[in-house]
Length: 115
Image 1: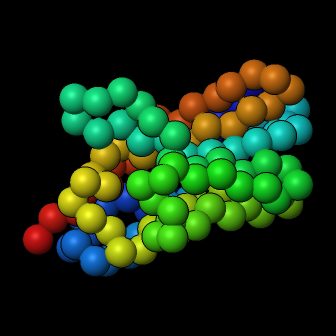
Image 2 (image 1 turned 180 degrees about the horizontal axis):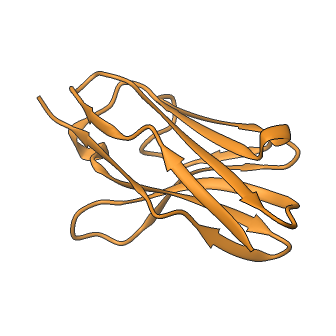
Image 3 (image 1 turned 120 degrees about the horizontal axis):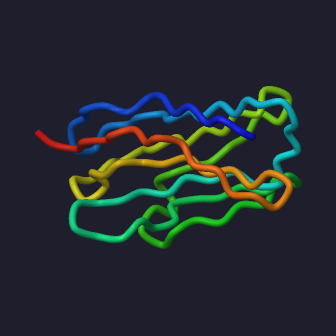
C-alpha cells in the first residue's frame, strides 16, 4: 500500500508560479513512475506530466515549456514546477504513482489562477 500526500497548491495570479510536491510513503515501495494529473471543472482528469525511474519525462502539450516535473528518488517525492500560469490551469492537481504495477492516487490539491 502506498500513500501519496500532495502539497503546494493555492491561489496565484496569471503569469505567476507555484511548485507542487507529492511524497510517497508505505511499507513496500518500488515506484516505477510518478506523475501529475489535473481535473478542471466539468472536464475529465487529464495527464499533465509524468516522470519515469530513469528520468524520462512526458508532458501535455498545453504545459510544455511552462511546467517542469522532477523527482527525488531517495525521498520518493515528485515535484511540479509551474511557471507562467494561466487561468485555464485552474484545476485540482492529483499525484499518481505506479508501484509494483498498481496505480495509486493522492487526494488532490487545488490550484487557482486568478487576478
